[in-house]
Amino acid sequence: MKSLGGSAHALVDMQLGEISRELFVNQDLYREEQERIFARAWLYVGHESQVKAPGDFFTSKMGEESVILTRDRAGKLHVFLNTCRHRGMKVCRYDQGNTKNFICPYHGWSFATDGKLVGVNDYQAAYQPPFDRDQWGLVEVAQLKVFRGTVWATWDPQAPSFEDYMGEAMFALDKGFAPWDGGDGQTELLGVPQKWIIPSNWKFVAENFSCDVLHTVSHRSVDMVGIGPSVGEGRRDPMGRQLVTSYPGGHGCLYGIWPTETPRQDYAGSAETAAYFQDCWQRRIKRMGKQAGIIPVVGTMFPNMSFHAQQPRTILVAHPRGPLETELWRVYFVDKDAPLAVKRYLRSYYLRYSGPAGMTEQDDMENWNYASAASLGTVSRRYPYHYKAGLRAGGASDDVPGRVTENPVTTEQNPRGLYKRWADYMDAPDWTALCAAQEQP
Ligand code: FES
Ligand SMILES: [Fe+2]
Image (tube, rainbow, N blue to C red):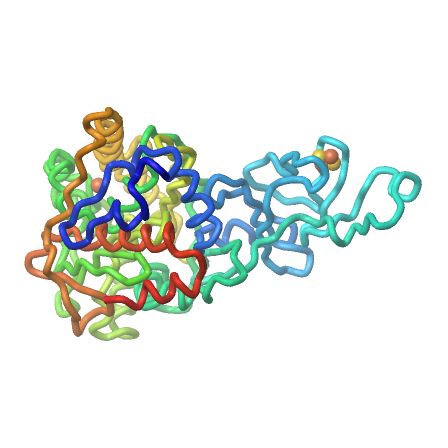
């Protein structure tokens, strides 16, 4: 990082609200992020519904690396690095499925779904001590956590617990991934993930969904067309109050608060779907009272997991592939018990909203792609990006935890919070320093 003038905090000026373009284009910084951020942070890996039965597996990514999320014969979940311990071959080359063992195609070592090395060709004849098969199983994450169906993991045994890592942002996850009626039911994914590659840095995606309020101008044409479930009402249900909220861990989200006194008028295009959600809404109010109206519309959990939880309900992970390349994986989730007709209706709404062919995602990608290309030049790299909106705004709220800005919500506090935390990770040598940095105001 010799050309960058020192520490990562020097690139992120929180007082002025200015962020260096190097964060979005620099190869050295990108490599450092893999070690400092993606090998330490809690990362989203998948959804429990993808690995329901013993032997089910789903190949995912943690940062740049391929991993296998699998349920072993005893029903326990694991996340393994998808690389053979013999000579590195990718042991699982399928997207998902069910298996007894992962058999490496290179020299035939086989690994059980609990990661143990169970088969080595000519083991008795060819090998002597100190080769101990127990020492050569698949590499497993240090910590794994399932929360409301979402599966998370970290490589770092020193990382704080998932709950401490998220801090008060647990409120957003809890509200976001609960069943729509606020009950004890489960959610599941619709189909398989959409996967595609964009020529931009992963942080453009993360900051956008952490709540870049200002960029909604670029969705104006979509709003005018009215692609939402309430026909003619823009691209989603009409929102109530809006609260932009940031958390010290670098997480951020936008909550909507819908009035619980009046019935909702959603899903005008489908009587069956409308009736289903009216019914859910009433049950939700009965269970949760005033809290029923608080729903995270969109958010990013540091570093790269973004989600929408007020229709559409979807998770987007921005997997880094290089300073100027990101692989996006988007999945959509629904209540498991919803009628098939409702799931079908939602599927079509979700796909016209998000994903590579979704109308809002196309707007966003066009912005990120052109901004990336226009930030590469020797001269353009000298000029920082501008994140000054609402620099002094925000405070505590009675409605949700975190630092909240409401009326007006014109603030860039969430991207600023994300980049402040980015700099913490890049500069802090260990979790003691990272936790201390988080305590600062
Ligand atoms: S690389 Fe897997 S068995 Fe050799
Ligand atoms: Fe957008």
